[in-house]
Image 1 (spheres, rainbow, N blue to C red):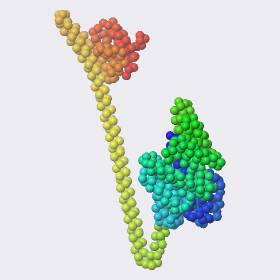
Image 2: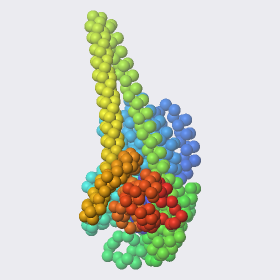
Image 3: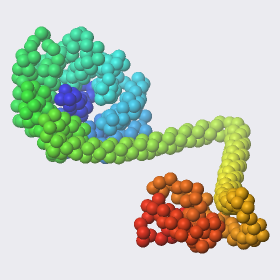
Image 4: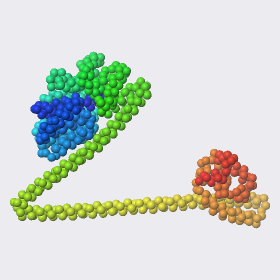
Length: 599
């Protein structure tokens, strides 16, 4: 985890710290170089004043102004002021679309590529870098700018964390063009990029040749900062190089040295970096050094101490405005405290990690939204300018034709009028077709809506019919049960020769009349009544229990129930009492009210 944090911090730092020296060191290029160094050393106010003064001194040199504005883009990206960086990138783009100099377009593509890179939009970064490289093919050679365009492509691959041959190819192209410039400050930054690329290759392939190459370019970078005078005024570049070399020599096998010997060498280089960092008081540099120190630690308490020092700098807005670094350090500290079972501290850092992640996501989304708006605004203006230029060119041709060949001009005018009318007619036809399609779609939607309403109505009707049939079936079931009981009684009496048919039939007619009345009421019983009744019963209900429940539900008293079922009223009372017990009711609860409240 610590290795990942250190490499990520180095990568983030290098993206912003890349210098921007253009062409040979004439007076203007020397000024550009000095302002870049001020930016790298976090002297933003001094750099801003110097650039504004230079802009006033060269008000008509548009290419030089574009270069100065690109310095502003770098300054504000390094100061984490996205809005101002985007403002100056848009200004460069506006100048580029208004001037014939293609080099302006290359600078505009480069600045937008850097902005997209900072916001983790790697596809757009690579797109703008390639646009800049295409532009440079049509203009004068600018080896530095070519190298920087390849550099933002390689950083895009590096940030995505996966090595491939394409990544290697871009890094080597970056190296090829920067070495042509003889600009040691930028060559040093490129050596670091090459070193990181070969380390990525080694992590994937485990080939010793890749690791040897990584150390080779790390040592080249060391030689530059130690012996080249051009780097003497940038102590930060020197400290960063020492820190990077300390990190890799501690992490990776080197010259058959033991782990302890590599740690001692790394500590020596890191102490040099730390000494410079304390002198120049750049918070980000101190933070990276503390993180690398945590790699050298041999116990958890030491590692935790240095990570907390780095974290305290990271959360201080005066020294650091990058949420990515805060997230990485908070996550690492969370894991350390978690491994120590100190869950309260782990939770504290976990909450910080979540807070910083949310803030970072909000910033990125906001920045991306602004980038999209800016991109389309500039493209729209570019298109308008192209249209105006095309219109002016067409107007000049028409004037020339009118002066030279009046008849041909008239024919051309007639043709234009005809074409215009034809386009109008064609547009009208297209409009009519679209309107017809819209009406057709509306009609289809209307028919579908009506069909849904019809189907729902039919479904509701079927539900009502089904419910009515269920009610009728219940009423008929009750009547059939009674008929079966009646026939059974007649059979019993026939066996006993105790038959008074007139009386029996008279009683049955009375009962039939009662049933005609009952049948109408039973049909009002809810079809789900018995289902709900059985579901709440403590024990299984018999058919007789269900009959009693139905009779009680339709407001029949004990006398009517005893008459229909041919039982004694006392039996009805006993059965009702048992039914209450089966339903889990206490003595005070009214059985009839309970049943009627079921559905």
